[in-house]
Image 1 (tube, one colour):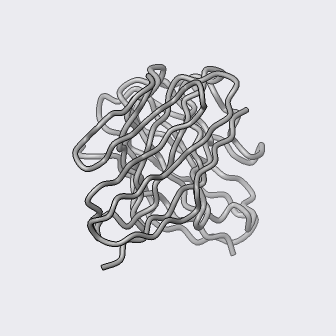
Image 2 (image 1 turned 45 degrees about the horizontal axis):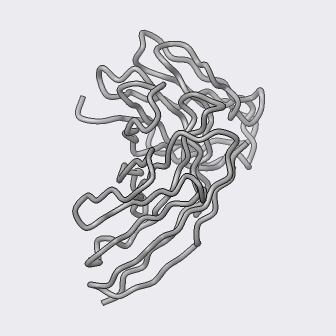
Length: 111
Length: 116
């Protein structure tokens, strides 16, 4: 089976930088995805990392270290609209198509 | 369609009744997924379809839960003899292909199920 750990909540001010860490344990690993979910909304895809390193998409970047079973999502130049829950999710080799989600990190952005 | 749609958006039912939840995926998406999300929690995988086949049913919580997909499109999740612990938001997602890891999943708005 798989397990993922991420912090439950992070608070930061507008304009700041936030890093959400995700550690995982899985018997086989393809890659790590990140999703954003606003209160009452549907999750939306942010990024996917299959290889080690940093992927940058605008203000958001995602990092993966396969050897450390660790990844993070970096949110830069925080805006109020970034207040949401962020989920890391593992694609594992023991089950095609099954995406295992972490419990989520609630990011609260304050003025 | 423009996106994944689900119906109903809200469902209130009495304990012991059966419910059916419907998902219309994005046209052309071959993979379809069902998840359950309890308040303030992460997404719990239920079942995945590739076309009309369900290679992985391991997430279904009990034999009261079943799902089918017809014509490679619409899917129905059925919960029989509902229990209060079934209360949650049921989310459906679709993607272009299921067996390529990392394929972006597009989520519907969910069905909020309340079992009294």
